[in-house]
Each structure stands twice: as C-alpha cells, then as structure tokens.
Length: 182
Length: 182
Image (cartoon, rainbow over all chains, first blue to last red; front, side):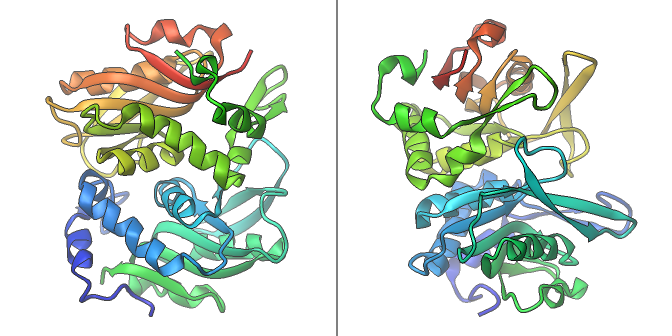
C-alpha cells in the first residue's frame, strides 16, 4: 500500500489539520504546513500511530529522519518501535566524523550528512520526512544509507506531492504516505 | 534543579551515552553530542520518560521546541503529556505569519521565530532544547511565549553547562536538566 488507507477515519482528520500557505517560499508554490497538525494533539498522535502500526515488528533497527521536520516525526516512531534515531543533517551541523552525499536542487546542489558509525551494514532502515516533493532529499538519504551497507526498507512521509513524481526517484525503495496533495 | 542531583539510576546510562567532541564548532569548545544517546533506544526512552514523569499531570498545554535538536526531544514529550508541539525556528523557515525575537550571540545576533496563533494567552508552556549553555536561546524562547501571553512553566534540557550560568538568564523561570557537564 503506497498511500494511507483513505477509509481510515484518522486520515481525514490529519489531512484537515495541514495548512496550505500560498506563495511560500516563493510565488506559485503552495506550501504544505504541518505545524498546524502538531497543534492538534489527536491528529499528531494519529499520525504517529499510523506509522507505528505499519512499521512495528518488522525488524527495523534504524529510523533516519531528515532535518528538520523529519526530526519531529522520526523520534516518536523510533521510540515506539524500539529503533535507533539517526538525524540526517545539512552540512557542518553534525560534530563528529561524517559521510556526505550531494543532491540536486532546482538551482545548484546541497549536501546531506550522517555520522560515521551511526548505522551499520545490514541494518534495516526507515527514512522519514514530513513531505516528499521531487524526491531529491529522500534519494540522497537512501544513497547515504546504502553506502554504509544498510537496507532502506521504505521511505515514509506525511504528505506526497504526486505531480512532482518524487516516488519515481527513489530507485527500488518503496514510499508510504498518509496524505496525497495533488 | 537536575535529575543528576536526584541520582535517578537511569541518569548514569544517559550521561554515558553522550559523546563529547573536542574543538567543535571551533577550537577549545567541547561539544556535547546527543546523537549517540539517540543510538541507544533504551537510554533515549529513559530520557523521555524522565521528562514525562516530571511534566505529566501539570496541565502543560504547549511544548515549545527549539530548532533543531529541540525537535527531537520535544515532540515525544508533547505526545506523552497531551500537549501541542510548537517549533521555534531560525528566520525564514516558518511559512505563515510569525513573531520574531532577536538574541545576542558571542559574535553578532540571531533570531528565533514562532507562528502567530500557535500559542494562546491561557497556554502553559514548557520550553525544550537539548542543551543550555549561555541561556541566550532559551531566553529568546521565553520572551516569544510571554509576548503572546502564555505562561512559561519551566525550561528543560538534557544537558546544562553550569559554568556558563545560563540558569541565571531565564527571566526567573526554573530550569530542569538531566545531566550537568563541567
């Protein structure tokens, strides 16, 4: 299942609590703001529960969360399923030795870093972010984890923007989302 | 006040999991790295449990987490105590209307922002970050919350650097930490 079961009564409440902000960060973009979801305690709890129900008992030992909004959703999932939480960060934030992966932006490139030694070969990993758009960020996370020999079992986001076809840029890695925003 | 002084048996394991990285971000600084704590699910759980045990049942309606490491500890606490989670962010990240609070750094200044409408005058707030050093960031957070009329009940961090006297810069608000590092 690629998208949360639309008939699950919790999904409607989650979708309704997401605020759309026009023209952020620039004209023409409709920004999906999850901060309003975090203000609704039931919707936030349901969001985490839906992910935990899907991922517990699957031998996942790492939840990798993409800075910064992945830091909000990843740790509660990690705690509930008994996995490590590994932050995937912008350059020069992590203090120890890191490995880095470059990825494309609309204009130019950016870099994602992970601490050396945080993830070991053979570990099963879930990658979390609040939203998938072009898939550039998630693709970089998958590549970074692959370089240390870990296996990314799935990427999970609250929201997908399907028109941007990010799902196609994740290689063989499946994507699970709760809400699709066309 | 610190749990370290209370000698809760879980504290030893938490402190042991924090990695000190010398000369980051610059020579002479001993950086307290909590990412290694997050790699130990049991110690991470103990960290959250210690906070939740302290704050559950005290009618706290908002957990405000300071970007970015406050996003790791704040949401699990918020979910467990039934509070809203409100991210306090660097400029330009929050998409909606914001209020801003400037604060002084060692060199220059920075700014913390909060969404308008996220916090209301009758809210009772807990401020969360991974570490308190000089107290500048926490002070800005307190100011933001008080400016919208909320009551800041306490600030809480995993780690305090007591030699930097941040505790004295919190407008009289109490500070609770799990671990001190001299």
